[in-house]
Image (cartoon, rainbow, N blue to C red):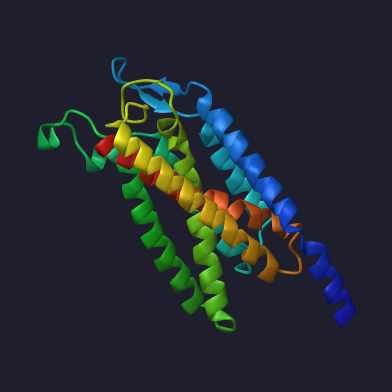
Length: 252
């Protein structure tokens, strides 16, 4: 590929920040709309677990980032990140991990918050992601661009894992959908207000960072429309902010 062809490819991969921002706004609108829909309940009839329909958007973002991927970490790196993201969704929507870590009766409590199980799962997944990503790089015979490949794999994995945090968005909205682990029965108005304000500020900060990410991006030449993946990155990473804010509302 000649120098002029490389410039042409790079220009085609770039998009104005207006387009990036439009994708982000569309993603947030879809997430809020899905979170406003009463979720699916299962488990104990008196205190059922509630799975928000926002999980559909979480999985969709994982799929879109896999397709419009701006990272240079190879097919194996993409696969590792997708698997980590899907496991995070499982942790956010089921009670299995939470029941294992927070058994009934522990500390005179007869239940646990699903946010607790998810956060514990995220911690484990992040550790595994770093270990697997580092081991993968060490196993390479030719370790060129090692730091770039490692950092791209980790950032992609963090975004995929964080996407599941949007499953708890309904707990931050002024609606009622149950009285259980994933409901909107937050502890106090003050805790809710502080959590929501801090989460909004962090989300705005991440979206602002995407301006420089889009401007300075150097995606794989084979990537198709990688700017879409760049646009989704702050939205997906913000899922961690949403999940932690949701946990704060039910604990305080």
